[in-house]
Image (cartoon, rainbow, N blue to C red; front, side, top):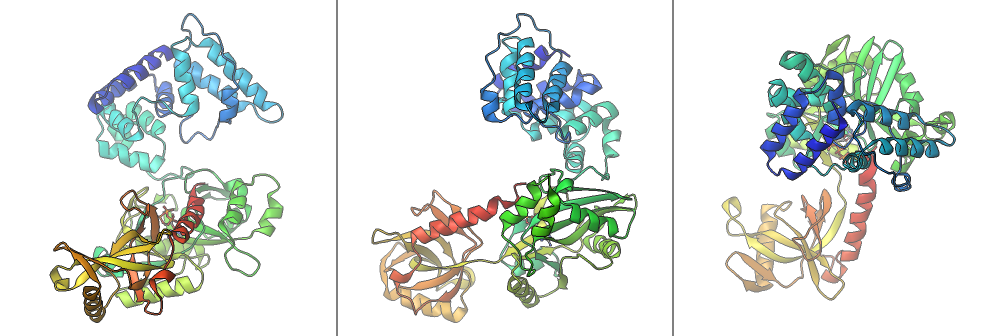
Length: 523
Ligand code: ATP
């Protein structure tokens, strides 16, 4: 396949708004490729110079790309699709001293072989931005269409292999049958299962049919450990290989009980006292690839394992949680396990959460004991409950309750001090109060009423409540610019006057602090 044809496809995709047409164009193109061209086409279409599971990287910064001289285009197209792949491989292969110059020279050479139509497409691949409206989901559909496989089968393989290029190669060369045989494989990392945020044990118990497995939620970084005999490799949450940075974890994995396994877990940086170190310290460990030994001593890691996806040559992801845990127990002989318990009532849940928080951890995970391991899935089979900071808000209005809360003013509009003599709204909540407190607050708010539109009663801002939340989000909906997610009243702060409530500036600081620690799993 000529690269010119690929460029032509890109231009047609760019000018075709319809999703179905895009799928058809892509599927048609894929079905005309030679097997070795398939992975590269999928990679290029999704703005990657290499297939996702190919560890090679160009290592060309934006500054380096910008410094590539303008190269006169070739009058005639001579590039094959695989020539471009080979050109990228040469750029990636330049390493060590003087490699920046070598990379730029090789790139200039590649550009010089491309025509004026092809050069812009090459540059788009290098920048990772194709601007043709093709995302992974659309490519999955195209693979399904071109190979006569079901979209669900393609999706499943994509989650297991984490590489659409490889999925496309298998689907198009081996058909639906080959795709069906894709399974969990050693040294092919799969996307980790994720969880939904909640603040409510009753929601969890309802979703998990009355019984749920709680585990401490450790505040570190997710890792996936693969081992066959003495060979151990480790991947991060984003499936970057981190084996070289974690020799201490490699050693632990080698000493575990089992020939072959894939384990899921969290590593936390610990100080000499055993308390968790700031997240930045952990990130230093993950980034370091040279002179690791000193850092291993300086920033020791604690390992907490919580799942087993593969054992003795067999995938366990379709087994229920409890089976996977019993495999994990045998492999670890009880060491390095996340602290866990099984509960059937809310109060036991709250007690376990308190214990996790008291030990300085982030919260707890609640996992459905009957659930399989669903790679890449974020849903109700796994929940997370996190600790929350409290702030003090002023009630500025309240909505009339309905159902069980009829007769009360029960949904409270919360606000913080805006710094200009007023209050800025940040959210609403009807959670956290007892029936008696609802009755009392309703009477007090009635006395403070300044307007009533039949649904919402606006009040003088006098009652201060302590509020917990799971997250502060940016919000165009509120004039404060922020919204509290999962707000819940923890106390009525009659000991505080409204001018002692939290200020908008404090809230902004909390938002930013949260932001700092949030980037933390972006490995
Ligand atoms: P967060 O920012 O809350 O860590 P996330 O998007 O990385 O979220 P979620 O599934 O939403 O992932 O939250 C679970 C995360 O918590 C996991 O990715 C993992 O890194 C971490 N974690 C710590 N302890 C556990 C545990 N026992 N089970 C599962 N995940 C755990």
